[in-house]
Image (cartoon, rainbow, N blue to C red; front, side, top):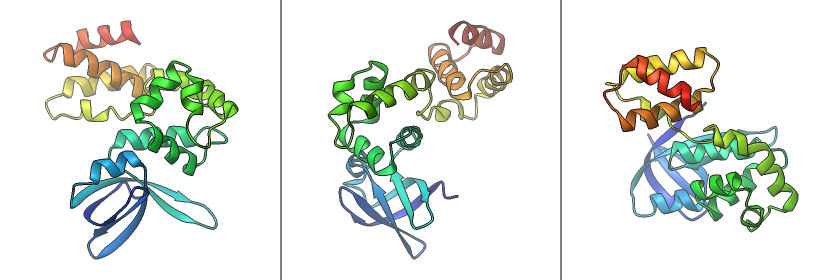
Length: 195
C-alpha cells in the first residue's frame, strides 16, 4: 500500500493533480482543501488513499494526514462513497465537518452537494461518538517527538487497559502541552481522569 508520494507537481487543478516522482507521473484526485495547500508550490508530499475496486484503481490525495483520516472515516459510513467524501472535503474544512457532526448541524451537512437529510442523519449517528473520541484525526505527530518516551510508555499502558488509541493520543497530547515535564505516573493518572 502507498502511504504518500513525494515529488514535483507536474499538473494541478482544483479536482486532480499529477505528481512526478522518480520519472513516474501519478494522477491523484484531490479536494479543494488540498488544492489550496499546494497551489503555490512546486514540490509536495501527498498522503494517499488507494481506492481499488474490480473495475477501477484510483489514488485520492491529501495535503495532511488529518484530512486523509477524516476521508477514511467518512467513506466508512454506508451510502457515502469516495466521490461524496471528496465533495464534503471540498465544501467544508476538516474542522468544520467535525464540528458540524458533533453539533448535529444537519442543515450545514445537508448544504453539501450530494448529501440529503438521510445521509446527514446517518453521518451524525455513525460518526459523532467516534469523532468525539478522536477518530478521523491524526494526532500521532504530537507524540512522535524523540524526547517523548514518557508519552509513548503512557500511551502503550492506556491502550493495554482497553482505551482507544486515538482517544489516548489526543488526551496525552493535551496534557503534555500543558505540562511538558510531567512524570509518567502523573501523566497516566491525569489521562485516566479525562478518558
